[in-house]
Image (cartoon, rainbow, N blue to C red; front, side, top):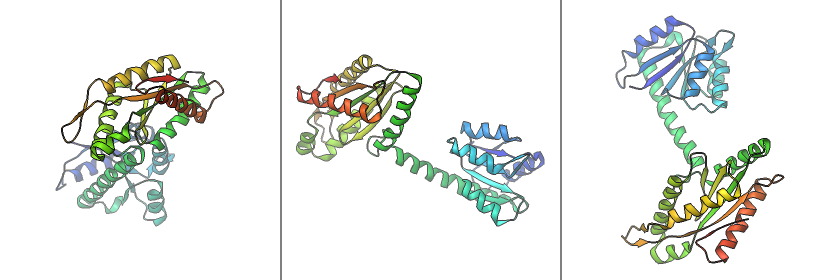
Amino acid sequence: MRTILMIDDDRLQCRLTEKLFEKFQGERFQLYSVYTYEEGLAELMEGRHAACLLDYQLGPRDGLMLMRTALAAGATTPIVFLTAETSRAVDTEALNSGALDYLVKGEITAGALERSLRYALKLGETLAELRRLATHDALTGLHNRREFDRRLVEEVARARRFGRPLSLVLLDLDHFKAINDTHGHPAGDAVLKAVARRLADGSRKTDRLARHGGEEFALLLVETNAEAALTQARRLLSVIAEAPVTLPDGTNLTVTASAGVAELALDGDELALVRAADEALYRAKASGRARALRA
């Protein structure tokens, strides 16, 4: 049974809302109530509830402040705002702050509450899918170039701030155009998906893996110097090549890749890091492919 978080300093209101839940005609929910700003923010940040009912009045700080703080910190739980105010200004401000719906406390019925929650949950699912599509490659499921570039900037700044190593692997499939020309684009898509799975399975949880574009993948290795990154790149190339990829027509095709490795210089930035890895990749391709070289 999915839980709905209720953040309200009025315990009687929480009990009344729980009674309304018992009258729902569709899906049954369990209400989980907290009564302070701090408890509510902590629960929202955990992200373990299907939706949240958030009261406007929460002592010296209000629900609008809590919602803005939680959403700015990355909370994604759908929020229905509860207010005793009938002013349109409050309703508008709640929606502008990130609430997906609002209810006036004195007008809440079981039917209205159930409809509001159903609407917020559905809209929340749609927004979650849009967020996923904005950051992930549709074919492989890996992070896309835009999300990788964002994370690259963050990790470069972190590495420079703390003086920690950071390395980048750019990996490109060998003779990929020939695969598309010979076997068709569905075969090329099958190869890209298979390689993405092998790279994801072979990477550490702390690594940042993305489809960088076309048949190129990028792997950002935190807390990793160039030598360790080169070892990892060679291991991943072996993982890619060790078993053939089965194409949609049943053909088994051996796939190889080349890789370029670079470590962030003490005075370097993200552009210099990518350029160095790309130059190393070009040399790997020029020297025979199916190998990894470092800058």
